[in-house]
Image (tube, rainbow, N blue to C red; front, top):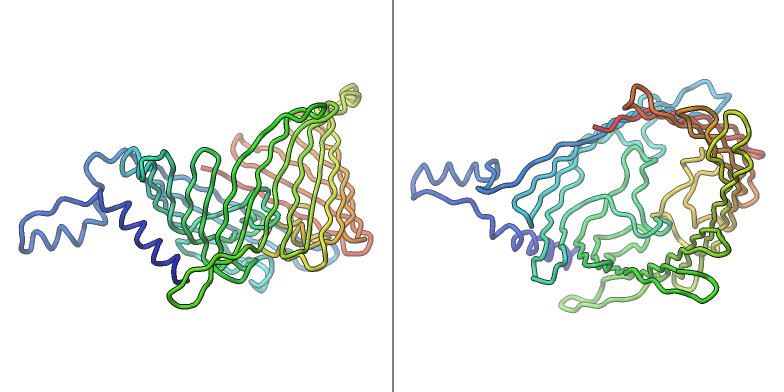
Length: 370
């Protein structure tokens, strides 16, 4: 990365320059002050917060003689320099307890992999600049996203500018476009007669290039998220065009009040979704189907045709369940998931996938946020 690295460095220097630590006179005392400046909170600092999460997960193929356990722990350090400037650090430790360390992005990494500096109203326009490395998902994540199903979700390095629903970003060497990337997106809503309110979030992604000494932007992908209501049903969808290859998806959810009379079942709803994508559409950097098991694992928009019908319900007090039927490019599977909270803090999630043309799979995760 050339242009972006220089801009990131300049941005960080500009953001932090106003927060310089006062230094004493020349000599040993001044040298020691400079050496420890990075460890000393500036005068007037607001606060520092520490948070994190820990998860252990078993994702196995039924009938095999080996379990597939992996574990992950993350820490977040958020430091407010003042009311407008903040710094964030994030560390991730993950390990594959039973596998070879090559599947499902399980690498056994233990490092500080997220770090950002943010400044609000830096230019006096009310916007916020953020520079560094962080988790980043564009829109629904079908084109570009950090997938929490992975023990070590991918991160993006770059600069982000956000202001009143408008976002502009420059990212380093994204896999999806195989080049330094720029993008923008904004929120837009309008009322369509007979169809209610419709909300849109158009986006644009492209390459940052050019010969030495020049700067050139080219468009690689454009599309939009959409959501609204019609005939009493809420719906959402997305359309994307990537160098002429197109993809789209649509989904809705319908409340089923009749099931409330069934003993032990409350809050039932039916959800329907469908998506299609041209063969040439590349969405390897997007979110995956991992949350419903390995039977249909893969990037959402990398499947030519996918449809699902699911019913969500509460089988007993404190539990949420879902039963769904998924058709992913002709590979059908039934999927059942259930979730609850143990001891008031530990979230447990279990699932089972029964595939017509693949081995069944079972997964269970237990996570704690603190």
